[in-house]
Length: 125
Image (cartoon, rainbow, N blue to C red; front, side, top):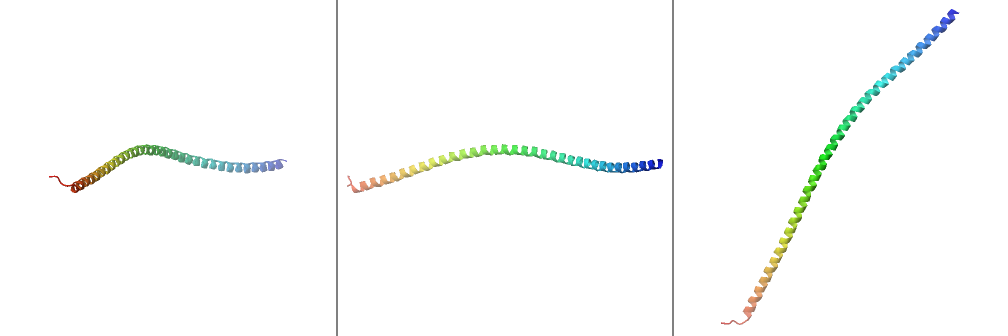
């Protein structure tokens, strides 16, 4: 009976040792997976931090570009106003020159008519 019992206990010990070995292997794999996940998590955090810094830099750059765009828009408005002023001055100049040319032509024509009228009429001495 003792021998049978010893054999049963030996068999139970071997089964328990096998189960323990399987559990230790599973524990090792689980720890290895946890370590891999920790490493992956650290990399993702670093990447996330880098992306956040890049986003902040891009936001600052967008602010600078927006300010430059505003300044350029104001400068463009000043150029447009100056251009409109110059155009109106040029239009006035052209009108003045046109009026002067018209007056000169009328004066010449009038002078020509006076000269012709005098040349037709008899001279009085």
